[in-house]
Length: 484
Ligand code: NAP
Image (cartoon, rainbow, N blue to C red):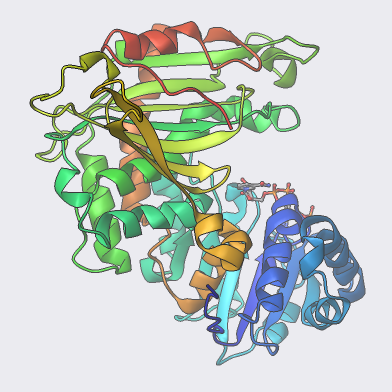
């Protein structure tokens, strides 16, 4: 199966923070891959901007290195690389200063799609937005892309929204949550709304509970000072996991249209109950197996920041009343895996005597690794042993099912940048959505801060703190094993 290549319109993309880690690891390699894939018209320009004194050649050399390091060999065609690099240029600019802006103005063409990617610290977003207008570089059609974290609480998120709103309309602002750019995350919507199969069962009457797991093996070493101010709740739950929860729980939008989808997600966030202290387990990894513990990786030896969190969440609406959503995420866990598991209820009446063999139907949507779906169904155990039941997986790896094109799934950033150029905001968070998410998150964080709760220690390479197991055990349920 070959995916269709529909090139986007010619564009000028300015990457503020173009020398930074994100630009070098994701944005530039991602743009190259789309150029290689024929999505980017050759007349488009990419302009790096940061304070470093570089010229165009110097910036191209940086980009060349980034492509060599982060693009797979099969896509590194020397001719295509040279053609791509020829579209790159660089302007030295200080977001807080005055130099460089007039030069930038001459580089951004009128009449082409203009996008400005703010790949810098959020404290600079306001300065960039202001200067783009002051120097009459941006116009009413320009788009700005802003990175996470979008605030650290409701108040700061509101302040950020307000500062951007002074210069750009909501339709011009693309708040990135790269989880929404993942193939499987979008597939969640396709699975739910392009099939009749699941939707009739997609409600508390038939769904016992939902588990959402985002487990990482990495530590916070190297980004400890940022992470220690955030913790798992701010870094993962408020944004990525909230988005997954919304896509699983939302009502069908009337159309696959940016505001229709985002309206439905917002309704889910607004229907979230406050979380009780007993329904929260926070953890912090400790040293082990020759690896440092969290406290060695952050700057505060008495830090109470969580590197792991598990929560039981309820959604108060007709569809989900009575079906808990269990969320967990953490660093330095035993495997790197992200999945959503929907566990269905028991059939109302069993006609088989083999009650012991019976297991619930579970639909598992794997986000990584090996994106795909797995539906566990009951069948008869083969052989002459009478009517005994056994559970088998109907397993589908998207890469296998889609053949060649499935192994070439674009990275989330590539897809999202192309959506910015196309002017499609469906996979970007709206301002009110972000604020509502913080509005739910803030009291939870304030609660544990007020109580002075300390995170529970857990061994690096384990499945998280013991108490997280209890969170489910006491409800007569258990977490799925964390494994690749
Ligand atoms: P970084 O490596 O520290 O890069 C920051 C960039 O901003 C550099 O290019 C830096 O270049 C530029 N910069 C700093 N001060 C500036 C100023 N006053 N005026 C103009 N440019 C300035 O940071 P990063 O990791 O790339 O992150 C960028 C943004 O993406 C942040 O908001 C971060 O939270 C977000 N993000 C990053 C990742 C990731 O994986 N890295 C993931 C998710 C979100 P000069 O020093 O030359 O000016």
